[in-house]
Amino acid sequence: MQKRLQVINLGRKDYYEIYQYQLELQEKRYNGQIEDTLLLVEHPPVFTIGKSGSRENILIGQDILKKEGISIYQIERGGDVTYHGPGQIVGYPIINLNEHRRDIHWLINSYEEVFIRLLKKEFQITARRIPGLTGVWIENRKITAIGVAVKRWVTYHGFAFNVDPELKHFGYIIPCGIADKGVTSLKQEKPGLSLTIEEIINRLVYYFLEVFGMELVKDEV
Amino acid sequence: MAVKDIIIPKLSNEMDQAVLTSWEVEVGDSVEKGDIIFTVETEKTVFEVESEHNGVISKILVEEGTIVPLLSVVGQIEIDRI
Image (tube, rainbow over the protein chains, first blue to last red):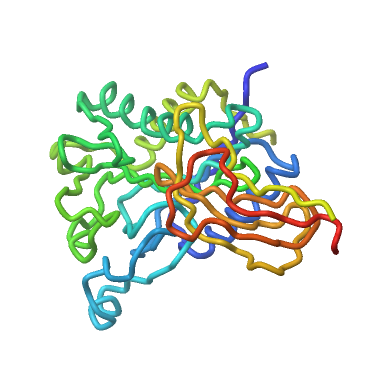
């Protein structure tokens, strides 16, 4: 039987509100109360610090954070500091790996593959993996950041794909603790791009389903 | 008194090590099956490892921040002293 994925497009929502929603869904998924679910959301500006992260990789003080309206959260996902903000599609797959593969490398490789296919087939952009630097890169510029947590083989946290975010805000941090590489966005790579976030989300979901061999759960009304 | 090893799970067929990022328990702590006892990280993924037993943590063998082979022993739990 084909595996199924529920997709929930949340629009623009506060980081912490959706973080708590993730925890709730993660537990429900483990208990078999819901199917595999992909949350898609844009957040107001926020820096999050992962498990192996350091506050020192945020380069600005409270005054600028306050002026720019940027919050900070320390969370349990893998990785160091990252930025989320409007114009970035953040995805939180709540997937029970017991029903796919109990293999972290396979999971991360699959997330990367979604964006490599999306960029190649929809935008004719060649993106790549860099060994040891999880994420999706165009040359030495990161377009998709990945940071995941897994409990009882059910995933949470996920990926952040830069469509057209305020790239200036990345300058306030050392993204993922890596100082010698840059950050980019779809808009920066394809300046003439006129697709809406909604249209890009639809294509992203298509490749997510393709890579994971899943079918979309249709809302039953 | 039975002692069981606490081991790093096999996180992947294509990886052989991970970083033990944090212990969520100390020696002497009582834990129940399913409690998170430590976390490991690899490829930007934090994996929260649960206890497989009810018992008391009796040994922590690996410090936080250490790179450890998958399936290696990182601690011990006494399982009938609860």
